Length: 460
Image (cartoon, rainbow, N blue to C red; front, side, top):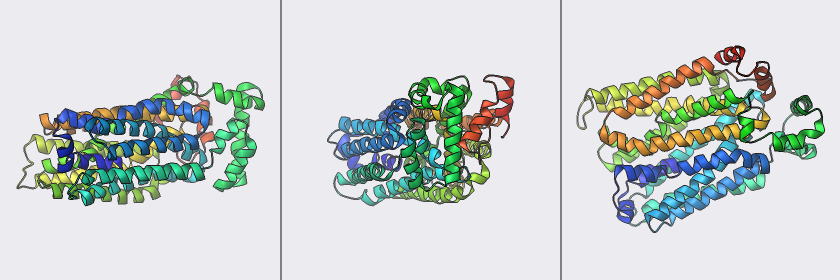
C-alpha cells in the first residue's frame, strides 16, 4: 500500500505546496527513505524472531510500521515526513521476512507454494488500494489530499499488528526446537494440521537434533547457540544463503519498484500528459497485476520455483529491452504514433509477468531451501539484500530517466537476463517437498564440492 501511495502523493499539488518542489535526486531520496532502514532492520530481524518467536516479531514490526505511517500523515515539514518513512522501514524490515518464514513453517508441502504466495497477492491488493486512495483524494482542497492515504495506511498497519497479536499461533517448528512440545501441539491444533504430518515433523526434528548434538535434550541450547548470522553462513548452507541473497537483490534490479513507485511519471513520459490520465493508468496497472496474482496462485505449485524464475527472468529482460529500444530509436512520441502505446502496454505486461513469476517463486524458494536453524536469518538477509537494491532503484530511477530516456530499461533488462542465467545454473527445484526432505537432499552433498554444484544445477 505504501508503494502505491508514495509515487502519486509526491506529485500532488498540495504536497508540493506543503513541502516545496524538489530535484530528481531529492525526490528519489524521499521515496527510498523507507528502504535502508528496512534493510538494516531485516539484518537483525532473523535473530529477533529466533529469540522471541515469529508471531511476536511480525506483530512488533506491524506496530512500528503503523507509527511511521501516522507520523507521515501528520507531518508538518519534510524532515518529519522522512522520519516517518524511516520508521516505516524499520517496521517493515522486522515483519516482512519473518512473515515469509512463518508461513513456510506452518504450510504442508502440497500447498506451501500457494500459501507463501498469499502475501504477494495482498501486496497487489495493497498496491491497488494505495493508488486509488490517492486517486480519490487528489482533488481534496487541503493537505488531506495527500494525508488521507497515510491515515488509511496507518490504520491498516495497526489492525494488522492487533490481529497478529490476538490470533497468530506461534510457529510449531520454532516451539519444538525450543523443547516446548506441549505448546507446539496446541499450535498444531489451532492450525488444523493432521496428526500424521505433525508427527513426521516432530520425529525428523528430533532425529536432526540427536544427530547433531547427541541428545534430544540439547534442543533448546542448540536453538539458542546455532541460530543467527553464523548459522546462515555455515558451510552446508552458505551456497543457499548467497544464492537467495543474490536472487532477492536482483529481483529489485529488474526495475519493478521503479515502475511501481514512479508509474505516474512513466506514463506521463509515454504520452499520457494529464495528471488524471497518468494516475488512472497507474491504478489500472495495479488492478491488472492483482488479477494476475490471483491466477498465479492457482499454478504456483505446478510451475515450480526454478522454472518460474528462469522463464520469468527471460521474459522480463525481453520486455525491458523492447521498451529501451523504442525510446533509443525515438519511436515514442507524446502526441502520435504507436510507439507510446506499445510502451504503455509493455509496462502493464512487465508488471504482470513479474507478479506471476519472480514475485512469488523467488520469495518462496529463499525461505523453504533453508534448515530450521538458519531459515529466519538467511531469509531476512535475503530481504535485506532486496531492500538495499530497492533503495538503489528508487533513488536512481528518476535520475536515470532525466539523463536518458532508454538507459534505465537496458540496465534493468540486463540484470534480469543475468539472473535467469545464474538461476539456470545453480537454482534447484524445491516444489512439493517437505522442508525436511529438502534439507535431506542438500545434506547428502558435501559443502563446496562438485556434487553440490551438480545438485544446484538440476531439480530434485
